[in-house]
Image (cartoon, rainbow, N blue to C red; front, side, top):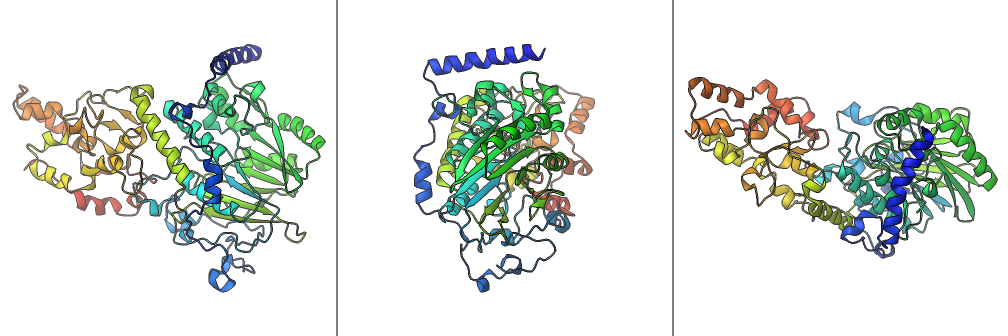
Length: 572
């Protein structure tokens, strides 16, 4: 059976490769609209990037005692000095601050102020989970993450003259979010990492659920040969293009790197598809570490896309690895690396949603051979021009493909009712309609057609449309029949309108206006269907006002405060 799976897998992807290469067509989907300019890597590194931090402050300027060169270790906080201290608690949960919201300190970070002449600096990221940029709904100034900020930080660190090696822990797409848009987002994420000259990443569990063809395309370079970016000791996508491990030189030292998918995560993938070959992690790593031993490397790195528990266990089984990068864990990464018990392995967590970068520097200093700093990708870092351009091309591709090309077919509303638009509601509910027109809900579509803090429009992006127009299901990101289609076809469905909360009202409106014959019983039934009790309204609000888009909405008494701003009751 396993042989049949491999044969079927090779036949499908082999045909794809043969056709594409024979026709001289690059398999990188972003080329459909033109590859982002290849020369931008060099120019972006040589040009000045605006980043609002002072690279080399004096000890007096540093201010925060946790970031001075001779720090006091205060409650497990990070320092620039690189001691192996763990964060003692999750600061965000202790303070009530959502993970996605940057603190004031995270907007004025001092970056590696006391690092002198590292021979290598590993730029560690991972677990992007579809967040190629932070959602701007609550203000970009408040949010963390995004490829543009990541690239700006990377460029700045490289401008110090250090040998910077970007490494990613995998999982580019969102959990339970399969479909063409996730495939496209995965391809653009790989393109971005190649532009930033990442040395390696690995396959995340949610990436693998996209399917072999989607995984294979980014594994190739522009010439159709394997790029070497995706590394895994135990996951085989297509044998000629698999990379079990890799070695590279940094300042005369030989670095060896491999990665693995944890056995717990592998079960999820095997249950969903039989086209991928995933071996048990430990036996696969035994083979690869034997090969790495023959390479006589000076330093070994292991990427663990697994639970924290499994990552620790594997590190104990293979103590030859000096650095373990893990995408396990569900919150913020620890302030310091974790020394794995019984080994010399330092484990670094990547955090969630691509909101953090870990800088791990190696030094020729026997007293302090490494230093580490966790950096939040806050608004301290300006958007990178080349990543902004890349994101614009991603939006252009969504527009060109359209909803149909993305596989989004309109679905019936659970009530089987149809939408009519807020203006029709306003013919009877005039006071409520006037109140709505003065709220941000009525301008929700405008904010993605002309984003106030960005350049590229987003009204062809289903992930934005779902909460910025009327007649979409925001949780599954699907359009309802008779809901918003486009600015031209359905102008009456712009804005986050009445029916998103009260449900489709076409029959109710028709009956009230005399366009549909209805007796009192039917009129009362239609009216009852449209009512949304206040005690149920908060759940409806949370469909869009989640922790990412509206972190303030989840504070105590927030609903009551926001309700006062939009309060409306029935017919005049």
